[in-house]
Length: 208
Image (cartoon, rainbow, N blue to C red; front, side, top):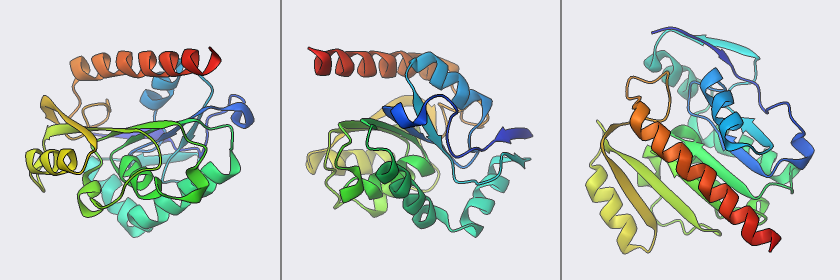
């Protein structure tokens, strides 16, 4: 698999007025992510692990190895924390894979006190930070199949800790990303519609 990836730190439209931050997986700011932003219909800042405008990975494994070499989750979490501090207009965050894990780590940070709510997809390293209690409502969505750990055990444990955690049956890690081997168009379509509803409902409630 080969992909040419636009890995810009943020999306172009009105970043100073953006209410949504999207933290990508290790593939970065792909055309698929840009398509998601258009579907969500709000000004968004897209943050990826990469600094360059164009990054090319032949495989998902290549992207992951590059991610680890460049500092992994710790460096990504620091980058996201800085972006959130610089954009107090942000109210919502969505994270995928590494981006979800990094946002979860930051969810107790003072720099994210202005965030209203979050949706985090298959953040596998969340399992290493189970004691975290986010400062805002957070929906955790996991793939049913993960090679490195038992999703069922993690979701059960998170439930016991009072978190909103769920798994999507029949899916693999990466089901929201068209560049991933785990991509599932049915699940991606359904959950994108739920994200649109979540943003609209929250915005309407805030405006009331």
